[in-house]
Length: 293
Image (cartoon, rainbow, N blue to C red; front, side, top):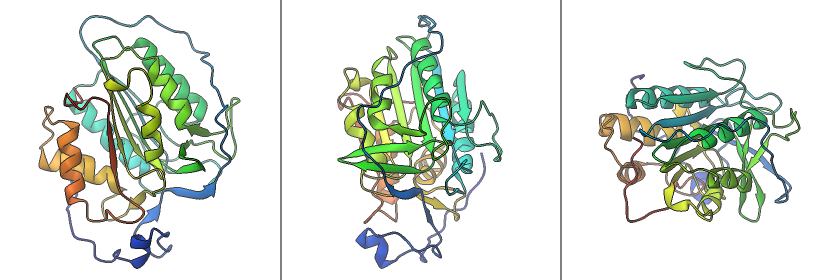
């Protein structure tokens, strides 16, 4: 895991951050939003075209899908989403995850690479993992990239093929598409971490499904907020604070660290929590703490 020295960034204390406006391009941070209001189309549905294997019952195993898209096919690029993916991959590998799939772009470097993060590929991977994870297993879905909104509280992940879609999908992975896929899971627990703009919009959808008590979701921002690339840390800003600053540096990668205490510590020390970027957590079971392993 790369070593990152923590320093106080004073150059980004701008009035625009407080007011919730975009930070100008000359700022140290760049937004993870494509700055486009998209049409809200809740009637969108997806179908599974990959074979379903029976759940693997017995000893609990750990499944993860990690996405990091820095160089997009048709829209503006980001800088550190591939670094986010690599850092999460190393962390989960060190925790002992047996099954990890990594999707990204076609020009960045990844420690493991399983294909382009098209909407089709990511959905198929999700169906594969959900259908194979047993009742004692854990699932993690972690993603970093552009995000946008359709209004009315709906949020979406901009997949690699947004703007130039492939395989019958439009490259827009909506919150109302992700949640029903996880509702099919019999896994004991599901961890979701989204470092995209408008990430908070996924929370209400995830907590409305029948197995929501199995879910813990950490969002980089609210359903109206923005996420940032942070050159100071070579990461997305919230990924750095949650993963590097908190789980790795403060808790020393202790596998018994709960996601609730990690969020509390990262949020309390997050220096940029105002205006457009307020991290959120959605905990489906307030009576139990959530562990990644």
